[in-house]
Length: 347
View 1 (tube, one colour):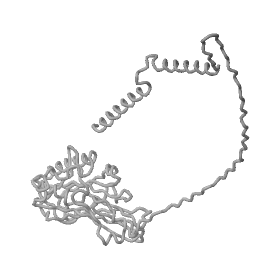
View 2 (cartoon, helix red, strand yellow; view 1 turned 180 degrees about the vertical axis):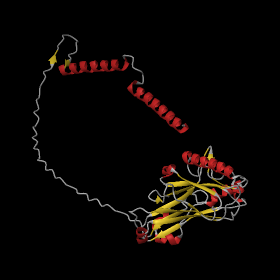
View 3 (cartoon, rainbow, N blue to C red; view 1 turned 30 degrees about the horizontal axis):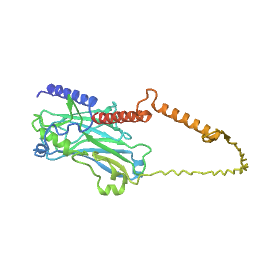
View 4 (tube, helix red, strand yellow; view 1 turned 135 degrees about the vertical axis):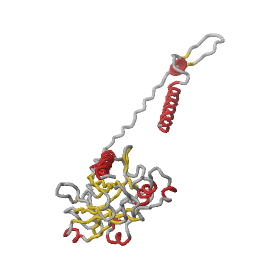
């Protein structure tokens, strides 16, 4: 390919990189490149990318805040690859070194020195609470090798403290028009790309990361590091936990109630004597003695009985009465409640 043709092709790749950066979706949307696990594991080339892991003392962190990060490639990739696109993210508390023209200062290593490279800051890293950039390579032939791909410098914050962990992560991103890649010049080794993004970098699904025991012994927070991270800069020591103690004061109020004196009045009983009325008939008539009180009692009983009977049989009230209406309403409420629950389950 002529030199100007290479420039045109690389410009197209740069446009693709910008598209991925601007519209990328959640990491690991389709890192297997559409291939089965069997096809990926049978890949002729099995690339692995590693990120430097550094544990330093707090004194070192304060006296030398600029730390060099190394991205390395292995897996027998010599002269097997050319085109690549990687999203490299890091803790947003860190600052990446810049060149005089304001661009990020990323250097190519022996693995990529024969390939054309380009680096672009990725503002969408903030969506994952990170900062980072997109790195691309391209060549007219498979001029990629095992070795150091990139190096760059990250600066620790002024308030760095013992126990701090600053993660570094390589992730896969894609959208309908573009994707991260790792391919040969002729794009025949598709399984190689699938292997890199599912087995060759760390991810929580198929290749979870665990910090080395020696590093965990120095930095306790590394025991709980995210399973998808690939590297870190960590400061020796345990995480400092601040405990807040709250004191509660209880006030007891005693209320004295003055006793109340109750005077009981003895009821007065009044006795009334009713004189019987005597009716006398001459001849064979029978003499009957009747009490006025009894007559009054009879009349009261009759009126009460009549009123009770009328109340039970009059008007348009349903035979079930108020209690029956309550049962019907309750049944409707239960039916509505059941329908609502079923609808909710269906939704």
